[in-house]
Length: 204
Length: 204
Image (cartoon, rainbow over all chains, first blue to last red; front, side, top):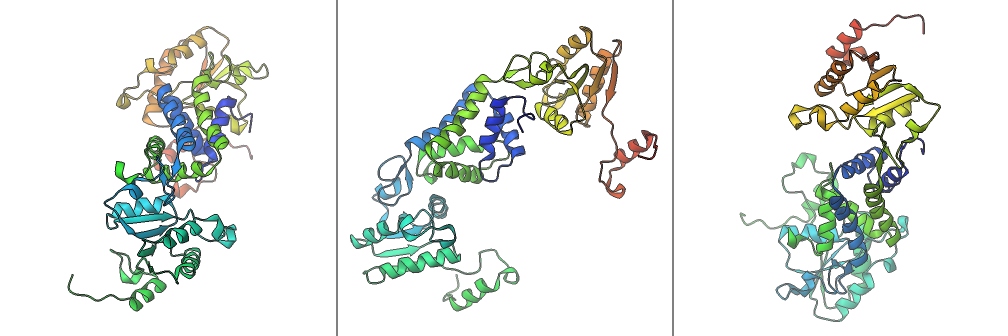
């Protein structure tokens, strides 16, 4: 391996890039050579952006979303409905739901789902802080918006059991046929659930 | 765009990653969140590796290959045949040829090929330094190992014209059917050239 690279600095950079998920050694080489063709300032901006993020990033003390401040923009926004808390797995899910512009409440980022296979238990996630947040009062609805996988379902059920005696409405994202999907290509579990959970139709 | 990200530091890092070739915003986000889950030292090693490379990298003053020293390992190696110079487009081609272990001469990295479409002319490439290197004497063979594209062919011809009066053998990589390819799937230009340039067969 050492002999293939004519520069150890190059080899080191390629090694670092190829540690990223989904980036093999060939792609890493392509990315490094691309950066090498840019000017110094561009490369420095690239390198420092990720280090600055890592060193300075904060997590909102209320919802655990990534933030530049102690309380994130969403939690600090007085226009948002603070009686509704949407429970998600990760920051990316917050962004996906925000992009729909259909939700105006707050969030709670768990940081993952319960997964015995990956030895992630409830204590590794922000579940207790969610319970405390609900028990503190003011929250009227908890919307469980986790992945529709076994791990997501397990986490949903765990949270449900912890909250079921609290005076809070617990709901889950509607599951059914995707908008734009053809019925014949929808998997049978989804199709079955969409029949069981059919919704009243009033012409729109 | 600003509203979608709950952290400007995050947005900045995602912006930087999505400038890389072949990396879209979703992949950039995935890579940044991956790095964010690593410890500080890992992220610092990643960020500094590329900046150190950019600031400290050298190019061999003989062959223009990337190097940590003034003269690269290949040019400085007394065991290599310094009468043979293989002309390639980029550092990656040097690595590809080195990986075959079939070549024991030196290289000359042009830094690209002549491409009027991308306004890359002969003066943007290390062509003059190749001519000077040949004229300085000692080189018996120049092997043109450029891409088999129109730009590569143009560059081959340009170098050929510049060197044809020098006492040096000029050769080009053999072109033909790839090893392991089925004839029916070989394109007709390649197949045609492989018939014209058929080689004597002596049983092996």
